[in-house]
Length: 79
Image (tube, rainbow, N blue to C red; front, side, top):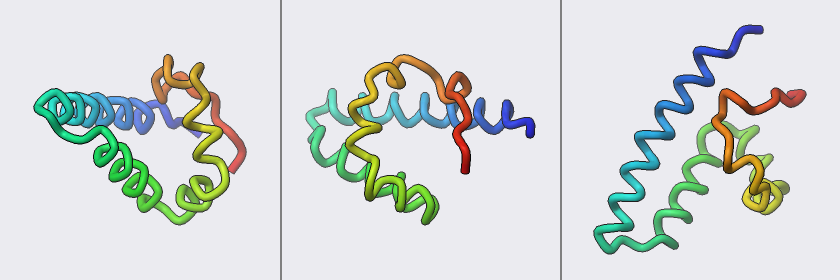
């Protein structure tokens, strides 16, 4: 299964989102509001992501080593 182009698209979209969120916070926006909204909307993308967030969000948030890599560099996990 070749997912390279899909992973690259996610990295590109995240770059745009990251820039927009950083600008919002730099302009005086609430980091809490941005973080809360982002997590809620990510969970809403797909019911399987929502299910993951229900039980694993804290674990993912604390995975500091994952913060340093792109999505394209992530290892695929079983579905």
